[in-house]
Length: 112
Image (tube, helix red, strand yellow):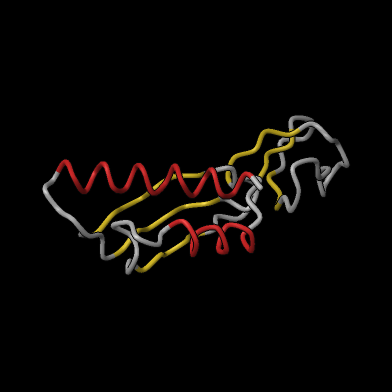
C-alpha cells in the first residue's frame, strides 16, 4: 500500500512548514490529487486517518481536489477525457497521447 508512504510524506511536509512559521497545529490542508495520479482514494483515506493521529494534522480538515484526466491525442490533436492512463483517443482511436491534466499530486495550502 504505497498510499501510506504518500500520506507520511504529506504529514512531514505539512509539519515542517508549520514549524518553520512557529505553529504547533494545522487547521486545514488542501491537496490536489489528479484522477490519473495512481492513488487509490479509499486506501489513501484509510492511511490518512491512521497517520495523522498524534501529529499537527490530528484535527485538521482535509480538502482534496481531484482534477479529471485530460489528454491530447498525438495523432489527430483532439483533447479528450481520459479515465485510465492508457485510454485511446475517442476521436481517432490512437493510443499515443500527451496527458494534459490529471497526474497532479501536490499540497496546495496549509492553514494554521
